Image (cartoon, rainbow, N blue to C red):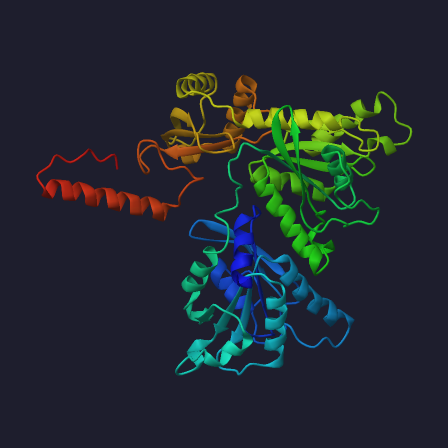
Length: 493
């Protein structure tokens, strides 16, 4: 079996959101390719060689499959320590990525830098594509000369004209996992998140009951996602220990940049996230940012104060005094439970499992449509939504999305675009008071009845273009039925 096919099989078995790194010598068009795939100007593009100094990362998607796309600095001889650090991150990209795109120029013969990049990429034993850019600058593109690099497949592109990008992305999605979510195997997935050195690995070891992760006082020991599976109350639980997330200006080049990407990928994979905050350093801005990312991802959240045993001078009232302060700092996630733990003496460690399972149960809770409509009518009667003159919103009925892992509700009516954000909060608070949903965010969508069809279009599902194709196909089938003198089915559109 070839190296490429073996690595493809291993990649297909993985669960994380895959990472695609674009590498190559300076000024071959890596940043232009990065921007073209994202369809927006994200990376700095200039004619001067070596414009990109640090890795730039963004989430991209093709054919409903998501992946992290990383634009790296151009490889060249390191003339000083700073340049050496920049070049080192390219090596780290090859080590951390799941797929590597090696980029060269069609109008320039193979250079020594091209050979170095190709050798490094192939040595990684990952799927490697050769992207031959700027084919518009040669009369008859001939890839035979590039076969000496030993990389297949080879795809010709003209980034500025967006030629060859579809072929490149089609070949990519053939070897990366479908989307970002793990298969539904009934397993509860928990991700440990937080700043470096807040005790994630120690808690991971306590939860896993074994010394699997490396624990050290040096910040940033964990580079990739460590995993352990345990059984708790008859259910399999997978625990993921992630690298520490720093604020953007503190993230070092190289492997730490990719470690942060892995941590963000763990958020998408998890059902419930534990955000660890060191007891001696609470209310840090980056902790709030991480909590916001977890909320936006629609995942369950537990605020975990770690290293509680190390707090000096605490008494029975210390925790009661700190809890309201933390609650005010995280008032944007008032539904997230707060717990104080110690991995050293095991305080509340077992309770974390109970919390996670309780939150997962809340996330799976389903409310019948009649109950939801009675709830909506009571809320509207008690406090009708305000609007502009002759533009008052009317909320008619409410349903829950049954195939969304996050509790999500669609509310249909007219003039719904005038619903104020405070009314959304009013409805969410009412939902929580009546039905619970502790520890998980709630998604509310206000949808005009006349848009799409009588049940509306879920903002979490296919985009509008997919809807239009569906409508077009349905109308074509109806027209065909009429042509055959058969009674056409009623068209809800």
